[in-house]
Amino acid sequence: FRPEKSHSTLLDAFEELVRSRGIEAVLLLVGDGPEKDAIVDRARQLGIDGRLRMAGQVDDVRPYLAIMDAFVLPSVSVEVFSNAALEAMSMGVVPICSDVGGATEMIDHGIDGFIFPRKDTETLSKYLYEVLSDQQLAEGMRAQAQLKLQDKFTIEKMDEAYVRVLSTDKQFFAYDSAVS
Image 1 (cartoon, rainbow, N blue to C red):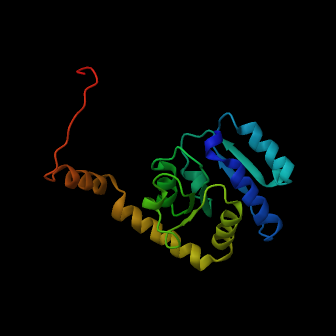
Image 2: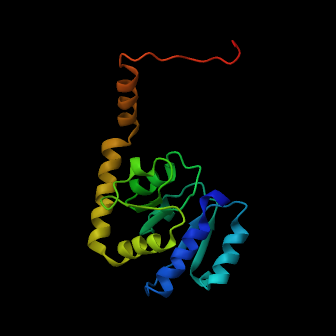
């Protein structure tokens, strides 16, 4: 849990989901880090601490992903291409990610997940509501996310893409800082 992961955005959106939209839900956070105490304090301030579960650092996230309806990545920076989001998609969990890094390469908004503007708690809450209140929508997104993962993001598919890029007629140059 680090500042750039913007867990406060998720906490605020979750509070909106529970209070204003009336969804009975539990927020499960997996991991650890320097922002852990701030997360717990913010949940207490929002009155949602009774709905917050902190799993801590784990070696295998699959059992936790298996019980999730949605996976949220509210980062405001740093995410290049989230392995965590791909893991969620592989487990059939609907990804809801901020528009940071490679999220738009991974997710077709409204088809296999949702993309929301950074720190936009209202939109995040809306997308959480849609996933949790519309089983047909959620099931369709889960299926689409798993299909996309098999079609584009397996090791074999990524290797094929690298070979295609590297086998073009383009010139590639290496830069060795020790030579300058």
